[in-house]
Length: 358
Image (tube, rainbow, N blue to C red; front, side, top):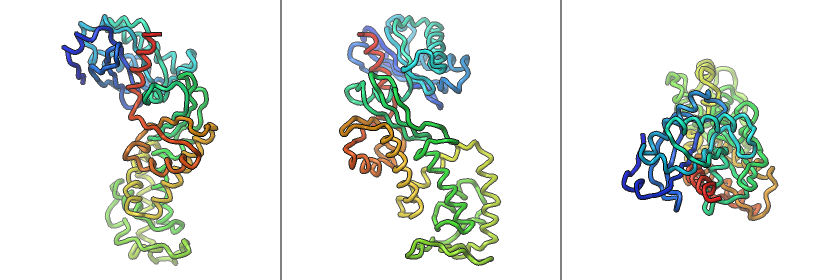
């Protein structure tokens, strides 16, 4: 729903709009062109330029725009910039960019918004511009459900590392962490992996019967960090009472429960890993450490210069993110620091204002 202040909008003069259009929703911000003062915000349906069909994309954009701009103020909108998942400012002929620009132009026309400057960029380019000072050059890192890093030059993405999706990449992402949690549960059940609370927590989240879940405290691993293969019918190492038959039942029921959902849904187990790590579960701590190593490798592949700005976004790297401290420590060793932003809305507004004044 929209949230705007009529009095402020009336007195603001020229207006700009910034859009953050992602796979879950489209968020729009109405701001004063002169000073960037936010006058209203609204949301609409998903805005991924690659996955949302063009007619629905246009509808979702029109929905968000209609909610944020009062009808009597639409003639004063001078610039609109949209940061779209699936688009890029680097190529005007990119299929996602063409689709996003066409849908945005049609949505504005439908509402009678005459915006003279219409800009389209990626959601990552918009997030980079959201950092203090609206930087034009540096590195952007996204670590949420997926993971990708980009080099930004003159506010355009010029080099991309990872972001290859759940099947081929996104290493260190929420999906990667969630998948690792389920793998750890399966390995514990079949005797190859270390004991971890993740087995019971993953099983509980999937709604498995209580009688197949491991019970009682998880015992420490042996001092060498190895697990002997249990004899048939005996409990898993470090898990009293979890006999082979129950472990087989656990595996038999867990696998179809996981495979019934789209693979990307594995990301929902990432918070379990963070919670388990907070309780010093060794397996969870190892998963998060490996995820941070992957993100470090992703950033280093961009050949950053010491002191170069890295703007980060995504839930894994926010103020309460489970990878924030560990990745920051790893980057600091290479003379690099993270500058976190919540999303691309402020960046899209800043880019719209720059387009208006250029």
